[in-house]
Length: 190
Image (cartoon, rainbow, N blue to C red; front, side, top):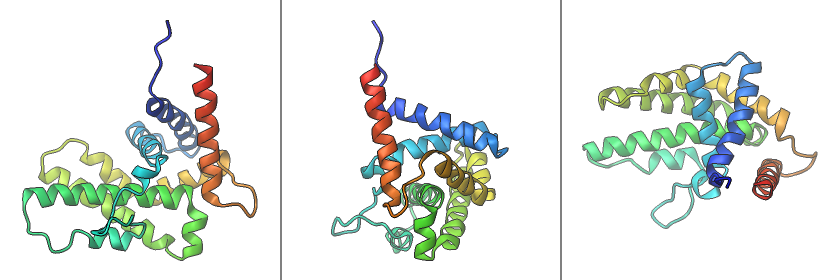
């Protein structure tokens, strides 16, 4: 009997293969970063994760500025520091995802440079907090910060190779269609 892998694991494998190929072609061979980026892509292919942050009224936050402002005013406690780390990690992941796979959308909005800077800053903050909290993995976040623009560009390259949307189509549709098609194909072939 063939054991069935959960859809999330298969989705990660799908992104891992594409990320390895794309990043490898561009000479970005840090396997820890490749694995992490593939995990981000798998997580963010689910709308609940991609748009996970909400304001006090329950409205989904899609603006990085709103995301960062959500934590202002909290007292400095360990809980707040852990919350800051999670927020900064999320903002780093979000800006990498958006500036990479949806670069045209971000450029049209006029905030590509802001996303590149904020993503770099957020991952650097995660690295620094991980050092302060004695957490492993801080070097990977430092690398993501240092080379954020390269990794974002590699995701843009991957999008052009694997997720090209038809002209005059929603840029999110091409990505969603590929994921849905792959999932249908993989679910029926198992």
